[in-house]
Length: 340
Image (tube, rainbow, N blue to C red):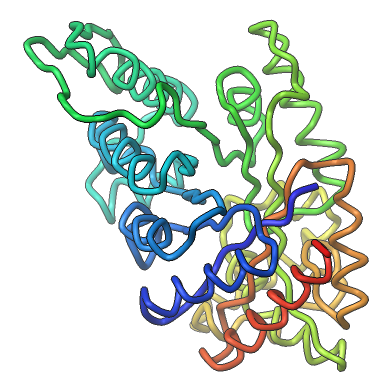
């Protein structure tokens, strides 16, 4: 099982420095998200700050760029990193796409299918100047008289999909090189939901599901005082528990009432950073690796044999930047322990 990391920082320089430290500790991939920064710009910074670790987007928004723009940025990042780039894509939710980005959302599964198809076709044909004519409900692509004249590091770049619901997980099994979990996940969820749905999707196209790289995103906070570590983690769990579309995830883990309570607190006027006080410890225990360093190592080890990689990240909500930095430092220490 590979150990990978999602670095944090208030500046790109700080994120890059954390990525370099994680690489030196043994992290095999460093991942960047897309919410408060552009995933592709942050990935470019990490590509120059590191020398051996792969650079992945976890995730870049699939529908807010055209497939051609995404394909071009991926080619540039792969060149910049010397063939170390991994393109992680996700649909995000409808409101984010339509209200924040004025982007078409439609139906996530067919939209993702067409997006990935177009990106791969562009990589395959644009360098040779072959015409591209792809019909589609969401992403038709028609390119003639175009040839990309630049060096292409690899003919194909790995494409990973972020998937939480069964339909997108089955699509991942059909077409993707890898799966990336949501920031909240559990070994039981991987066993009972993720792997069966990926296998179902893989069977549709005759693929071997074992060839799909599985990445579990594991939020981690450790301290000699386990209760303190869990309080640091509570704000991030509360932030994600406030999202109503995650109701099925929380029901699976037996926290329907707790999820509803957090949603009601948000609707009642509490900010997302104030929701941690409404999150019980057993909810944190179910979906994160928070506690003493031994607790964290034990929880991470539960994924061994279930996934190919874990992506460790620190909590970021309901705590100040100094606490996030402290959690980050301790995760990097854990990475060194795990990879010795």
